[in-house]
Length: 305
Image 1: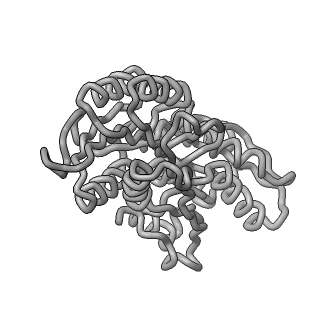
Image 2: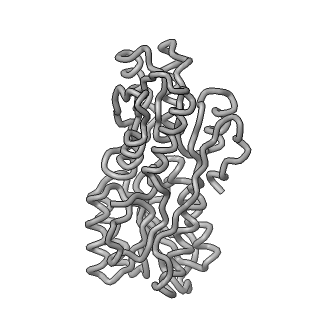
């Protein structure tokens, strides 16, 4: 499997809600997201903006990190006669089932998530190199630690999709001076991540770094570490939200890997429309990322458009 960026998300738009276009729209697209968080809300903003610009009738559904609900959402979109489905999947297994259902119904499916090696059943995908993102975080720790032996904890997202690829990229690129003391899922939830960080603070009070797979969780981790007297533990995280960049400037976070969720969503709709017109074009489009520290915070890609 290859990987695309899915730190999970959708805004509060309800399952099957319409957002843009109309009865006379030339193309009807169903957008299915995986869960609710800031990344997902900004992703959907980009989707809706591009759909409006493209004159698309957009149907939106939220799978709430539930594979069974994702399957139901795909079936519903097929029943509602969409011309294509844009899917931000819950998990690799759910994605495989979704591709099969869409293919059986003759509905093209475009992925904003994990991409199979065999693209014959997929219209296309917009991705970020998730193992590469994990590698960027590992390389930054290697540089920042200057070769000293350090202990690192990892607070991952939800097992089964993008989080696994990021973590694997990180552990694979970790330097020989790095001891990874453990990985626990924060489930992309600030409160849960705070609990995980509390556990790490108790089990490894000499911790040096924590790699946290989104900034919302990183704020929970920061609170827990500070409360435990570990305010010198450095956090590297992901996203590049306004709050995250402010935390870089204040020193709460030491580094983040920025991408644009809004651009990801907009590009996915634009590419879906282009491939529906001509499916001989490039199927997979890679989105840029950037390592941001206090030395280049002004260079961060706008996260929410």
